[in-house]
Length: 258
Length: 322
Image 1 (spheres, rainbow over the protein chains, first blue to last red):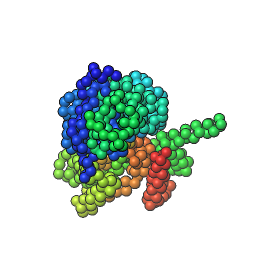
Image 2 (image 1 turned 45 degrees about the vertical axis):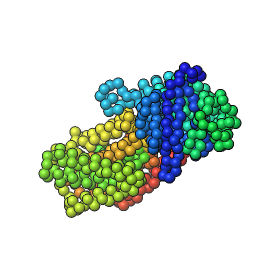
Image 3 (image 1 turned 90 degrees about the horizontal axis):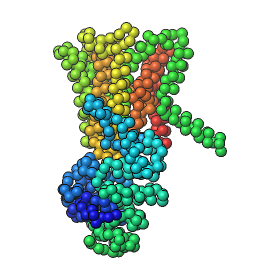
Image 4 (image 1 turned 180 degrees about the horizontal axis):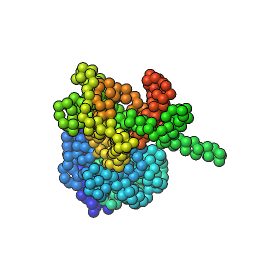
């Protein structure tokens, strides 16, 4: 990944703080992700990773601090704002609708409407157009998904994950956030997801990856940011560290500020 | 090995049939049953079927409306009470203002009650069951209050024609209402973005919200649809009976919920069928009519409706657990 050519920040997190009641979940966290870069967000349970993801994806707006997209300060007050700004998130629970088929899930809240202006006014869906686009985009991702009209609840965990990832990737997002995308997957499927992450980053998409799997982090990421009790305690290039170092940061045995 | 595979296939096929087409089989069986047992009466006749449609249309319209509330994961227990209030408002207003204005006033009753229900549920984050149980009491009391328990006649003949008493030859105007309401309900739920978002909210609320869907707005709208449908049902009663009374719709809630549940709509959101609700309401009408022709009392009919609801909900819950 030739990040030297793409040193422009796609997502900048600047002095973000967030507390819930009396508990400070994030304390003055700052880092950025450049275009085409894959950054791991690491930390023990309760370190603030998910809170940070929720801040960036508009579910819990931060109390203080600034988020910049492509160098421009933005206000992300809702999930819709985040998606409009080109930030797509693959949530841990995937945020898919079990009763809907694959196509309807891929286009959730991004539906293609009829070309007829009158029908369009009423929000008439163009299902055949969505199906055509869906099959093309899934092919591009090499996903082995049998039938686009299959309901999500009939799919395996890995296939569901693939649909959630495809939805994030296909929307033309500049930034894709993935919250433990391989947690529920087998070895082969995890490898596919890693391949997919490399594919989209080579297309210039910035990826923020939350993972507990050090090997995957070493294989796919360019940089790692480590959170501990809501604070950023390390921001390191993956080439400069060993998996042991990373585990040291996460457990607090080692400390380093970039 | 092969036989067990075959058995599995057969089993899953029967499960599919049960879920998607249950209401059609039951409808057909009940029709067959009454046709045989009541062969000496006029049960199996066009006139009687039109009669069933006439009696059932308000239930059908309410069932379509309630399907929307349930699709998004809410229930509306106040629909029966809205029927009476809407009919009374139309009847009282028609004594003073032109008919179309009175009709709009009655529809506004539905819209406003739906908004109140929706806003209370979404802002207080209280279960729709409790909120609409409360508003049901308020609305019922209001209907009794404004007319001192008296019925209000409607003499406007064009109102009575449009809203229930009219017919085109053998075709009752109420059949037209049923067809139009079914078509609109189907299109909104299956063809429009609103219906898709509503089902998404009912199927996975957090997921829908995370994808940027405004779950609050979508669900408030679903309660407005349910309540306004009940207001239309009130007008259809008033038009058929040439007047309004506080008792209108008071026994309908159970029938409507049973019709919707047996039609394949989940009582927990995310899965809904307009056609199922329509056929379900006809099934309830068919059973009612058959029981009357068989000489059963209203009390016994009520027991039958209750049993049907229990069975329909039991099947629905079993499906949900799979």
